[in-house]
Length: 84
Image (tube, rainbow, N blue to C red; front, top):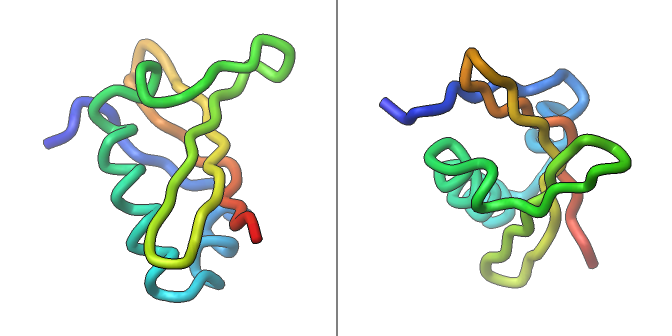
């Protein structure tokens, strides 16, 4: 079991579900890493108090926005954006 629980907000779930299968695989590969070390895998933005992590796969790249919940050890996915 990963050290951090994964939680998706509804908007991020809808974004993820609208992605083509190769993009979903790339997102999930990055999220697997985030569940192990969300602070180390992302870039923290002090102004918004959020992290971002990029993902890339076959012909796709994008960004995942998330927050890290402590002390309950949660990664809360806020947005999944594909960069064209």
